[in-house]
Each structure stands twice: as structure tokens, then as C-alpha cells.
Amino acid sequence: MKTISLQTIKRLAMELKIYPAAALRKCAPPLRQVTGAELSRLNGMLELMYEQQGVGLAGPQVGWNVRVLTMDVEGKKEGERIFINPAILETEGVDMAEEGCLSLPGLKAVVARAGRVVVAAYTVRGERVELEAEGLAARAWQHEIDHLNGVLFIDKLSGPAGLALRRRLKSLRDGPEAGSKAPRAEEW
Ligand code: NI
Image (tube, rainbow, N blue to C red; front, side, top):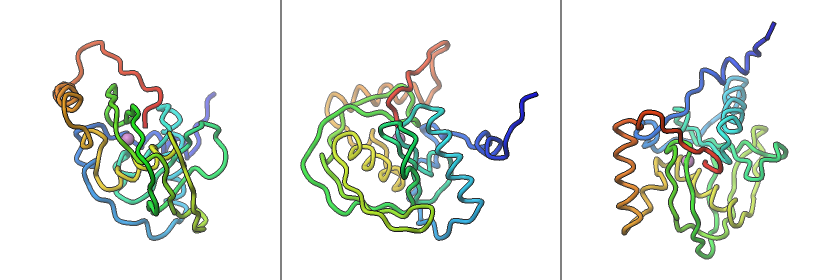
């Protein structure tokens, strides 16, 4: 007999919000305290992120309108992976690379981001940490913090790339074509 943990039940109740869900467009307020309920929800987000093969997941993406995110760029499942009330303290340089989003399945586009960031956030234990990130990790931080402000990577595109993507967004809003399966790898 297969047993299901309470955490799994909570995780299953957690639904990934897909564009154009209104939850993705809200500016989230800070999380003020972490009790058992919040911790369970945060761990559920982490589980959902791995299940969806994402490198990051922000609260609004599961309909939780607070400034929290989970992140594991290297997929090592170790170290600090839950961040509360994150803020970007410093940015440097410009990096162009393709990115995607779990809430925009199947869409990818080259987005300009800072190449290096310094961020501050709180851990689930209430400790303030400062982290420096470059490349993919820096991109993930900027992408996830955007989510906390109701911003999606599609908002950052212009020119032909933006136009092509907007056409595909329309099909996402109107429903996917029958039988189409979106690739999920390396999306956040
Ligand atoms: Ni995303």
C-alpha cells in the first residue's frame, strides 16, 4: 500500500499558475512570519519546482501572493534553496541568453539581464543572507524577483522576437493545440 505524507497532500493541492492567470500579475507583499504552515507551503513549492524540472519558482506562480521563492540552479538539492523577501542590492554588466518560465510552458526567448547580481534574502530560519550570482544563477534571481513584482520575461522583449512571442502567447491564452506537449527542461 502506498502511503502519502501530509507534505505530499499539501503539494498536490498546490497548483502551478499558467499564463494568463491573474495571480502572475500581482505585486506581492513581504512575508512577515514563517510558522509551520508557511514552512510546509515553502517545502511544497520546492517539491513542485523539482517535479516540474524548474530551477526556480516564485510564490505568485502557485497563487501565493507573498515575496518568497525557491531556487536550485545546479539541481544539487542541497544548501539554501528557499528565500524570503529577496532584494537585488547590486547589478553589473549585461548578459543575453535564452530563458523560459514554468508559467509560460513551451515559450523561450533571449532576454537581456544583468550578468552579475548581489542579492539579500532571509532564510526560513530568519537569517539574512547576501549572495553573489553570475550567469544562469544571476538570471534566475532576476527572473524570480520579477515574478514577485508581477513581471514576466515576455514583458522584456521587443522587436521581431517580441512579435513572434506575442503570436505564441495568443495560442497559449486560447488554449494549446491538441496533442502538443511543451518541453519543460531548464524553465523557471
Ligand atoms: Ni518564471
